[in-house]
Length: 485
Image 1 (tube, rainbow, N blue to C red):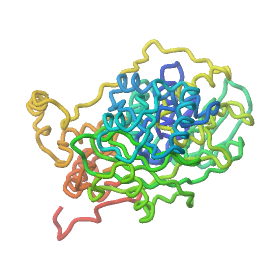
Image 2: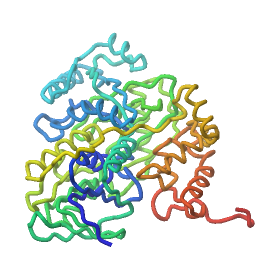
Image 3: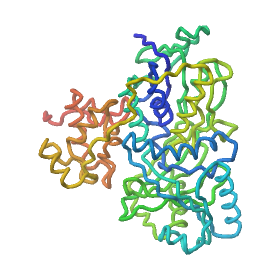
Image 4: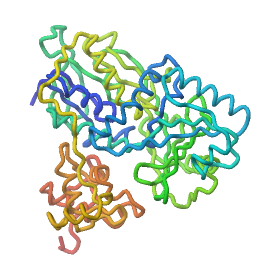
């Protein structure tokens, strides 16, 4: 089966989903083609969720041009799309005169990049802003505009809004080959061969994350290599009060070990930076120990025995550059690149989408806004966060709201069912987890996983042995025991 669209976007990470949402307002047929079976399963998942303000990128780089703007847009995007976003502010802690000089350089970078209200503060102000920050810190760069999100939530809700506005989502569709036809812009130029069927399109947007070099190569466009800059991340149990994001003075290749609260009250220590073999998502003891040591330097009283999860992922870095590649291919007209979107990719995503729209306009793509475009996505009920009166209303309307499946995060059966029925839907245990947090708590699915498997099997109309943890082949259940189902 072959389907034809005006635009195909390869990759359903936060970049591809943000672009899809931005372009869904226009009178175009659009398809998002994803290799995995769900949204945000690459770098967007293995991420600390910080919305960096934009003082770190060198002025004049593409990163610098989209970082501060993206951070600014998060206020509007979170209101329109109904995802959790907290503008917490952050501090880069310095411990000596050399650090202070580096903080001043960061401040000047930020001013050049359009970051508002940056200032260097002393010990008294540091501990007013974050009482748990190290008492050894002598200075800090205070940045009020920093925030945090769940990056996979942003990707999911952006694509939900895009799909509600007519965008097609193809999952489990890795691109195996790309055929490029002539230059008649009235006909499809690109044909993408995938196991889920061929996709034809007039314009192709490469937002494939760590696979972006392969897509570019298959289309006969720019040749570049991706470096797998792997990062380990540690998640701690919830705190009574979420920590403000605290950074060390950065290195030339990394922002260093960062300690931050999350929108759900956990503490995250993020992230190491080591070049490893592509696809390596293993956690390493040395890396985890480096994270814990670095975190204790910033927050000495941090109880690192409260670790509930460690995980790793790879940043999509283009070899030989530390910058984003956003623009029309200089080799293949009609192919648009959004490649090398490493940190601060999460912070920049709304502005990358905005920039891609402008790149398409500059290339002569006709963008006519649809009369029925709806930018609003109403967030589903979050039982754990709902007021008591709302909880009572929900249970009265459907008793499944009172059947708690995940005790750690207080997730009822009705919320899991809603996650499975959303469009695009959750089709795996981890897909449910990313949409409603069932399994994200202290026991890490020890209590609720079997219940989630049973609900998925019922809702998907399959046997529990067919329910996946994540991607193809990740079955959790072998079969019935002693004839009992």
